[in-house]
Image: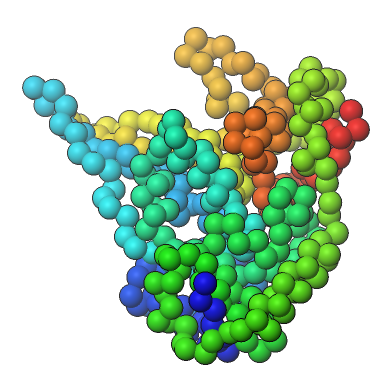
Length: 340
């Protein structure tokens, strides 16, 4: 595994230069928010920020995605492909929690039984450069409770760790090593790697939010009808903020849109928080209230995903906690369930 050292003040220029050769997604400031966006000519990415408001899953699992085109003729329908081949790209600046979300999404979209070619193609074409968390950015961070860490390498091709005035750059995969040419020729050694290990251990100790996420599955197994489920949803607005900002939520709906003889088949993000998500053609809805929808959300993340893939479908980024307009806190829900 190759390791390099670069000066901190050169990083933005390195990524901007990279954007001249390949498509680069990077964190940029937009009004009061930090968002992942395509880095255009003349733009420099942020290299010092807490975390982005939007999760980077959008680049592999877009909010709206064209799956195919079709034209209806007298002899039947003529079909064409979707949006074309995915370009080579670099996703710069993902925090370890967000990079780990790709591993969790891979379990669903790239499994033995079902494979999503749209997602798989974009993942294969994109190299992930992560910025390790030297200091956890928010009091709402709880990555260590769900299997992650502030310096996790899960889902990462190139890892950057701030060491004083330098960055330690670790090329973790063959895909990441293709970017070696951008990062100079100053080699890093064991001393820098040991420093990174110590920084990671200290960063993990700085996380103050700890929840029994891995312990509640047996409780969920036997409490599907518990009265507790009637207490979570009472102030929920069903706005979908928690699911749309979540790095691992992946519900979608497929629809055909036509104009004259031409049409497209698209898939759009959907949410288990929405009343219409489970509405059947008959008019029956098996999840008629927010009680059943919130139960589904919790069971999916902390039981069903564990049953199916052996992993909790949460990376502890805290976005749902920070941005819920009525302050519903998944950490408190997990704590409450642990005491049922």
